[in-house]
Image 1 (tube, rainbow, N blue to C red):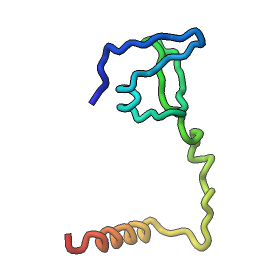
Image 2 (cartoon, rainbow, N blue to C red):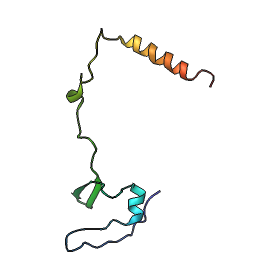
Image 3 (cartoon, one colour):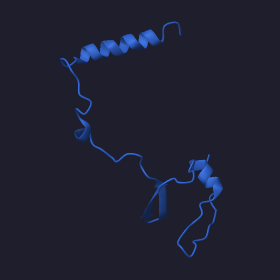
Image 4 (cartoon, one colour):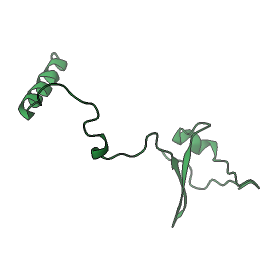
Length: 91
């Protein structure tokens, strides 16, 4: 499902632009949605601001902490398989 391609709007004296309701509804942009504005070679790109800052695995590694000895891959695989079987018994 996509919005019509030829919608127009006007830039106000204050630099404000009204995004047509059909587009806001399609993208689920409610009042107060923060948008990132990017100037691209094709024009201006608007996209929702990320809720969380981008992180790398190195930044969050070990942040949850854990007590006890590390689990072996075989133990983790066996636990995942057992849980999958438990959830799908009778399907």
